Amino acid sequence: MQRVPEQTQTQDLASEDRLYRKVVLRTLPILLLCYIAAYLDRVNIGFAKLDMLGDLQFSNTVYALGASVFFWGYFIFEVPSNLLLHRYGARFWITRIMITWAMVSMAVAFTAPLAQFFQVEASTMFYVLRFLLGVCEAGFFPGVILYLNYWFPTYRQSRVMSGFLVALPISLTLGGLLSGWLMTAMHGVHGLSGWQWMLLIEGLPSIVMAVVVFTCLCDGIDSAKWLSPEEKAVLKANLRHDGEGKASRLGEVFFNPRVWLLVLILLTFNTGFYGLAFWMPSIIKSAGIISPLHIGLLTAIPYGTALVAMLLNARHSNRTGERRLHAAIPAFVGGIGLILSAMFAHSPVLSVLFLTLAASGVLSLMPIYWTLPGSVLSGVAAAAGIGMINAFGNLSGFTGSMITAMAETLTGDINNGTYVLALCLFISGGLILAIPAAMLGRPASSRSASDAQSELAIS
Image (tube, rainbow, N blue to C red; front, top):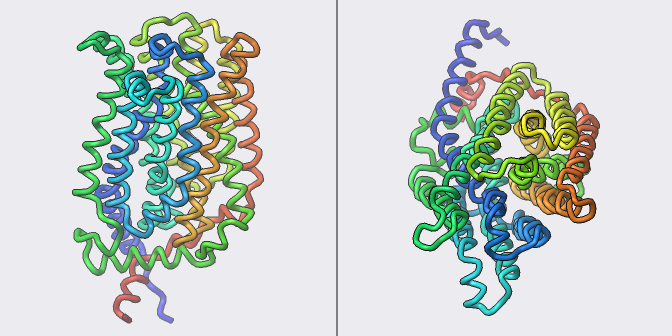
């Protein structure tokens, strides 16, 4: 066989890199904006709590249960939603998800009037709406992860995942600023409280993005009119090569020990993350900061810093090809940050400093982690497996929010639950180190575009 000149291989790889940049520019900005809108709707309940509890006469326990019951609806409908996305296409299904979750999120602003209309307790209506929000949003995040697997082979996913997951710190940073400002500036306008206006206004971006998704997003490689036949052949050939040896049948998902290891890792580190996300405004308030606007400004510091840490960690992981330590070390760092934030809870400066360390650790491991399911699964198995991993893992939203509430109820100090959240992150780091080396091996990423061009010519 004639050896392909090294210069030709380099040119082919450069051409392939340009092709994937084209795919990123066509898909990632839309998905990024969708996730920002999603997280505004998901975690703004943490800011609403600052005033909502007094208006509706809810206890912290009622809030914690309402915040966490979201994840039961999410859990039950996660796998079915992802299978429906795989069957009917991302464009239609993501549009449906975004419109319905926006409507329910906005309806939470009218919990009391709806409770009167249906003649139930306000707390019961709050639980129902939060459960429905989970049902409506189920499938969005794993659907996007699955969608990215339709385009990118495993070895290209860490930077793409980080590009998508920057929506987390961006939405949490902007959400803190926007939520704090809305609750202050809109309070009393047309007889509504600031938290009600916040829920209503922050639901609108999801409706706007639903229109953008339906108009601009395509379901996959074959339906992308902006790709030439040659470019489609390169992308599909790379995916076929990357999918060799992966589980592809539905039955292989539920009895795969590697899938269940991924579930345990997500369950533990997400417990720390959701505990942090839901309770950070309250933790900062317990340090002596009263104004919702000032609390919003301070929550922007940890998440803004975490954005930089996430991108740097993902870039270094992508350059070196190493993933285990790039996920485990941030988990340990996040746990240390949570412990120190609790130890110095009564100092606003030190508390925010160590919450910044915790947020940077937790968020830095996320894009690395979400490259792992694609290392094990493909096809319909990926649709079900990613949905199942995210479904079980997101039960941590229940544990993360309840741990802090129970700690405050039992001890009178909201910060004591933070130690348990830190323990969860330490366990997650240990589980990450237990991942089999074969699961993290970098595939033959040097496969050039010329190989795919040859396949096209043969066909």
